[in-house]
Image (cartoon, rainbow over all chains, first blue to last red; front, side, top):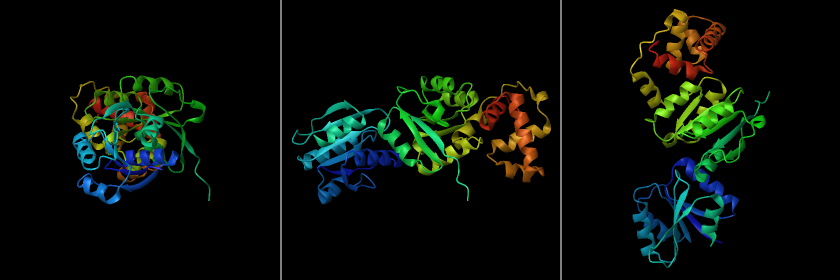
Length: 112
Length: 204
């Protein structure tokens, strides 16, 4: 079972993510109040997947930092405005692919 | 103790995370009737009291069409306070509006409660915009009495029926009657629409 860390999101988006993950039986091991120091938080929590907010202008930089520091961790950046997400698979040197965002596709990206 | 009648909410938003989050904000008397993205699943109007939809050029006419000839209450979620569609939506009879960036369980439930009570709810920034719009000078004020204009002015400040009654030394019943007359005279669906129209026409 994958252990998920939720990064900084707006309140409604955070509730939506919890709802979505809970519905898929996925465990949220921690939620970051802020993205400041997220890398050290990841180091502490050691999740399998980190979810970050794609609408945050520093999202891609953050994903790059996490994947370079922790190559085995998957990062998924989800937009809370447009139905899109960007997935950074583990051991891909920070490479990523874009995808449509739906509950089913996010659950698939999380568990695959 | 009597229980409040459940109010069924349909949520249409094209982002699944935000849509699920809005649904998770609901608490009694509000119940989730269903959800959709871009109205791909049409709301079941026999089981929906309030339709929450995102404000965009396709969503607004869809929502207005659904509300036509029905008692469906409309609440919109807008991304941008500067969006001209927001003013159009309020003038067309959308009862409540909430900015996406302001959305949290408290603001969302407050907007739903106000809309359900027919009071309307607008973000302060939107109200400020309505108030600062150039006035058309189309008075039409001859149609409204001083008493009706006085009530409208207090409504535009967000006062409740009780507060207006206290301010103007009327009974609450009188205030409700005046509001009813204003809505009929202005051909408006609710208080928010009447305030928006009166503001735009420079009546208040």
